[in-house]
Length: 371
Image 1 (cartoon, rainbow, N blue to C red):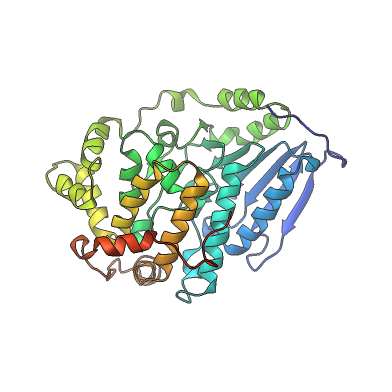
Image 2: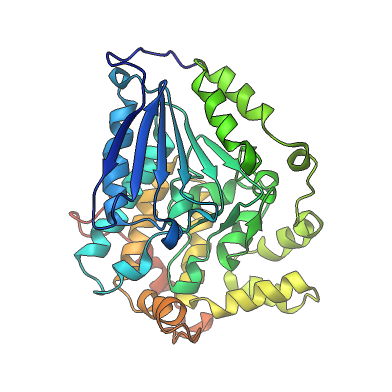
């Protein structure tokens, strides 16, 4: 239950805009006790920058203080194309292995943990593309609201990373081997599939968002919040058949094995479009990332909380940005766009068990993630 604590200031719109090199990339207001955040880089699909992270973290912490009078948080992306398409990867790969990567990923994970443990309801509106770093500040929240324009994916393996930002926590907790399938292949879920899969908790039509906002402003207890969100779930979302429903038995069988190599063997034996697409994606990804991600998701399933998973993922990503595949993946995908990464090692067979174990080993004491 939410107990509304009245602020000492009038419940009127209070704007706080954060100036940075990205030019007001995070906009916020408080209206009738509802903290509203807009990720405001629509031309960049609201990709998350370090400056944005450094605006969002203190803002959420201040709103979590009962004295603020804020009873819930709503986050959305500017425009109608994206909630947040991920971290601004190109910006953080200009100087390999430098301080910028260390600061970005550390502070990003601290923000993800804050989102996942916030003491007031956090509602993320998936109004378009929700990928990578955008997933971290969405799916870790208590309420995730899909729209007909939602597009979810975690394609990190394709650029030499792993499905991080808490992916090791929420992906293994999806039905069967769906999370492993999504994490290794980067498969996209669109629209109401985000609700059917369990990634979203609710759904709303895009043209109903403004009305939903107004209704949320009038509630004072979390039971009412659930009732309002339930009310806006359209029948088409409730009746929607999950696009992978007819494939889940095969996905569970193919991906429910003990190694990436076994997954590849299973996919080679299949004669279906979805298996061929999954195999193509898996074979194009960084072999090291694929094997590390496989272990990440298997271990994450048995971890007790998001914080524990984020500490593990911070080790993995630190090892990624100190290695070559991350920069080669970004070059091939986002810079030169030749889609011909030269992975090192170049095959799954060449990625040793010792190499995989190294990714999970402790970092230097002053580098480990502190939450």
